[in-house]
Image (cartoon, rainbow, N blue to C red; front, top):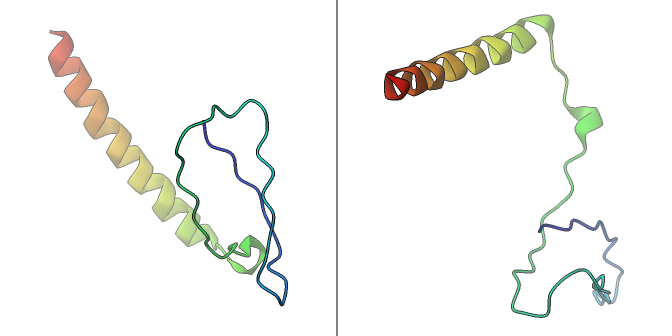
Length: 71
């Protein structure tokens, strides 16, 4: 189970995290990372087609491996 919550860090650098009841009581990893502003990432038609081609290549490679295992 992964729960992501976005917080604004105040000037005093103190936050209180409330954990939902669904989360079991045990050790967890708590990490802080800046939120990436996706509205500043621009894709062109060329970059989108490159991403799709790379994804197709990866899928085809794995599909070939699965077919070989199925024989």
